[in-house]
Length: 640
View 1 (cartoon, rainbow, N blue to C red):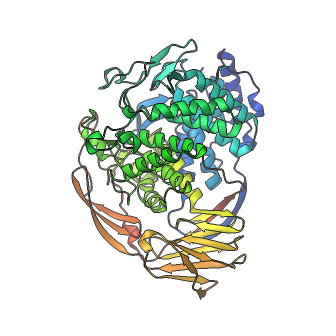
View 2 (view 1 turned 30 degrees about the vertical axis):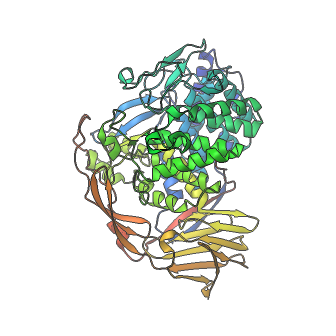
View 3 (view 1 turned 135 degrees about the vertical axis):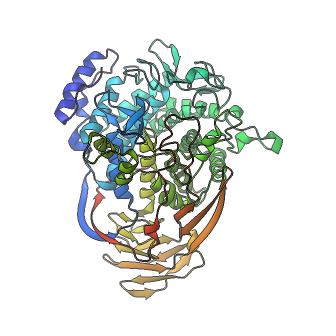
């Protein structure tokens, strides 16, 4: 049943009761005991301060919350809009509602609130989780309230069911209510029902939904009936590129990750046993590229092709399993899969192609010229997972991506949106632009492509990566802090103020640390770094690429000063030569700008006209300052 109106929290409750009564398959329970708006409010300390007006992930999180909340439609079962474009006046929805994606918003929003303390749209966030509980059957499956852009009505899509469990886990981490663990256990039993076992492996039919009677149906998405490599559920897929999206491993990822977490949190041995079988399926040779002609087995080295976002999500889930099981071979496969990604694009920009080997698998060439809005977040998450597992130091990759692709593919310039769309300030169209501000888009190296648009999958995925990066800026344990990235961050143990890229200056304001380990970015290696504690110059110990500051006291202020090198580098992407000007790890400009229309899409009027990396203001040698209200959360949510 669709929601009629959701404006205030009290109305959400009324709508939910009506929806609950309409769904005979719903689990029984008093949702009010677990869905409490007071419990999901971010808790922490606020204070005013003056800091450099440079990249601040907490502020980007506030904008991302706006985009994530704005894209949830409480009048349509709390679904999200798959695609929103401001290439038209008024702005429009070329592809409309889907229930495939709102569980991603539910997973990202608690993390984003931890970063910035925003309470915007708490009632809508609560209503969205309530809708998922309403759709959760007694059998542990999340059934779709309608069809459309997704699987048919009253079927359960395995990926969405797995994503719901992962969202529940974040909510458990936020409020600590043990009832969430019961729900996660219920959903995990549903994932067991959805799985299909063959010999020693198990899989989930890709892009398909199952009804309660066990009947499977392929996706209803437009064009799904004429794919290059057809798939008919519930047959076992034989290659990665079967189906509409052509990413079979992605279609296993959320379920695998959820099973791993249910084992970790609920000690469910059945979930672990099933997870092992799903991993065996995902490691089948047909799920990876055949590199036998090169003298080695691609499936043993993480060599993949096709949908980059789909493969990165699969690698993340495989990594989560490999860490829990201490599977050293699988960890190396994931690492090599990540290294394979790094060769495809420009890692110093965090830019990777939406699709790899387009011609081989029947995709238009332009897919190799576009970076999906999900990918910067995906890259950051996997890089940090690998780093935390001790498989390498990928903090530079995180820094490049956050400062460049992630920042530029998050849409935050309202005036530019207005100019392109042509809407009048204060009009209904203008209100739509404001509603979606902070969402994420796809882009070529220099422009939004294939049009100035946001995508329902990209906005929460970009936000997830944002949280991983923010979490990793600085960490603290037993009096010792690490600083991994020269980015702004407020925390309970120290505050970081970054003047980059304008000036080579970073200030650390100590609160609790006796020692601090500061990682030196690679572009600063072999360059002089001056260090001051309370304006007194010191010579800290250097261990590898880290400075060691010891004997610190509360309220000590540490200042690091250094030169910021400017470089000009050339890259070739999809046959096009580009020149990039860097200041440190920040790209100031990329030439030539992409203003060509892309063939094969309707309404090409604005293609390529929303250029990015228009960063002349960053060429100044003095960082602007501004007054901000900083938030420090009482609780830092763990990484999944």
